[in-house]
Image (tube, rainbow, N blue to C red; front, side, top):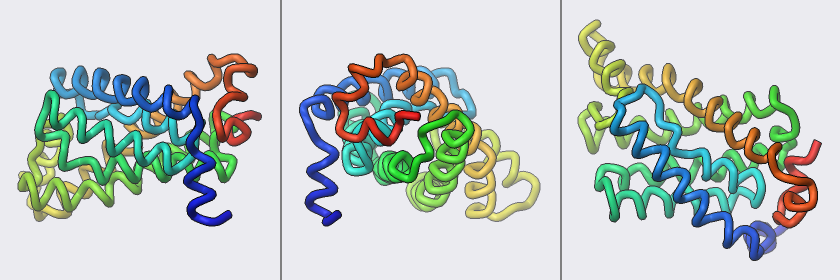
Length: 198
């Protein structure tokens, strides 16, 4: 499938309806977790949901818009993380195309793949924009690792590899639970519904 055809396949009316809902889910849950300083993020449930139901391009757009809107409207510190959100949506969409959204145990694999991607993409942002210490609860782990003598990049990357798998597996499983709660008839209206049907 050509690039333009692949992008077009991701977008129909249901995609355009789901994206704003997914953005709201991301921002509301992400803001609650941020305020509570939990050592997870859970700000990508909507992004993974769109990636699975609509495809990687729609997922990438959802993640990007989530962080841009969140950054402009509520928390300016959310804005620089949009590349991470973009890759989360993109990878989760491709995982769904590969059949990794059909059963719960395959969804765990999706969560792990998304986690590794997020850890790699987020580390340079955390190190070079924030000096390794961000507003999230992950900074507690980073600070601990710095106190044990690790250098900044290693501490941030290690903290991300500790937190991201837990966060992204939970995120993917929550998105999967939402999908499983949808009726077959409603699910069929999404452009990539066949990627999530067992």
